[in-house]
Image 1 (spheres, one colour):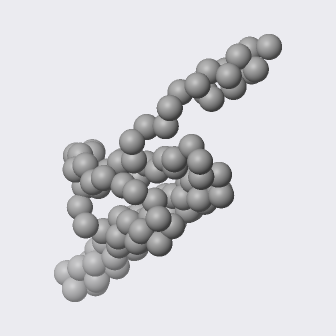
Image 2 (cartoon, one colour):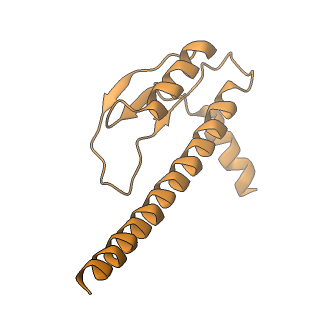
Length: 112
C-alpha cells in the first residue's frame, strides 16, 4: 500500500530542470557533456565546490514524453564512471605509497 502511494506521488512530481555540476574541466565531465549532446538531452552547467573525497556529479532528467531509456543509460554510465574514478584514485594512492617506500629504501641504502 505504501509503495503504491509513493509510486503515485512520484508520478505527480514534475521532472527537475537538467543541471550539470562540475568543479573543473575534466575528461569525465566532458565525456558526460558529449554524451548528453549526442542523446539530445538538454543540460545547464552550474559550478559548485566539493571537498576532495566527493566527486563532481551530473544530473539528467528527460521530458515526460521521452521514455527511450536515455535517463537510465545516463545514470548507469554515471555509476560506472564513478566506480572507475574511485578505482583510479585508489590505484594512485597505492602507487604513491610504493613510490614513497622505494624512495625511503633508496635513501637508507645511500646513507648506510
